[in-house]
Image (cartoon, rainbow, N blue to C red):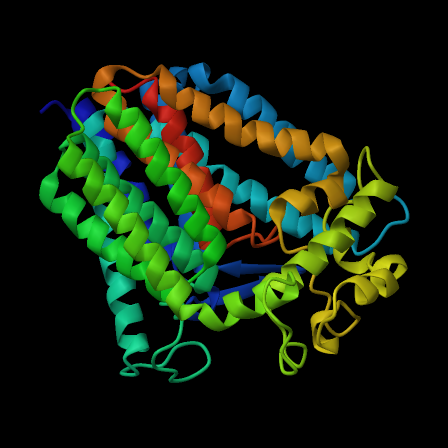
Length: 427
């Protein structure tokens, strides 16, 4: 192996080494405060990944970035809109919002970084192997939490949905991404042992996290995997049934752990009879629906460019009375000064914060990334299918959470975009 190839392989190991630090909840990380900025270990690790990518660009060239220029253009425009909309008048906590926008931009650099670092299929395979290994560790930790052997964030709560060492929705999305690796291996008959480990770890993690909207992303991922693999003439009926059965089992497990919330959401929709206790506590599904309603109302009054990045959390007052009439909830569920819940859906928050322009740019970023996966050579099919899976899992997960910077879900999203961009340039 010549020195040039050895240097490329060493640099390509940096993202794999970063996985345990990036996919870790902030409470487990050392942090420091620099002015208005909270810097976590994950920030430093991402900076190292970016530096490695820049070094790879100078030594081996920047050409791999070129085929994905539409993605960089649209994603860059979205990030620029986030920053600029912090200055919509009247000004409101501008510095805080700019810090959030900057951290989103920091995580976004993961996408072009992996394009510069992953130039050969073996380099991607090592990264995926490390990702699955961390997924096995995360699911194992969650099982210990579920059994009451170790504490989770709120203490020892056996038999409930668990966050592992990531956080509930982040763990669900991360597990869905691990499951995508497993489904890809099963469908394309690649790395069978790794695929089996990924399926087991991903399925267990998704069940124990018990997040409904990320599960919808898993369903989308499974459907895409089956459709794309069927075109390769490699997918057998037995393997297709294995993917379908795993998806169904995960769904049953998620609904079993969320049965109370599901029943209350059905009551909220009027499908089941109302319960006297249903309005005494916060129910996640009905609360998200109510907050989405407020977000849509904010957008309707500011349709083109929204109210400004992150400001929808504090613009609920004109719509609160209507929301209370339309959506019976516990008082704690409604937004207030003490509980600025915000719009708990990325898609609705894009409309409320940045208007229809921001929404179009956000959706276009996901769509362009998906399109990029279709442009690769046949040997890149496994990478393309993993990228599609990660992106679709994130589509579902972001439906249940607003714009939050510096979380594992954000890392999965931008890494998914990066893998999509990698596909076209693999050797």
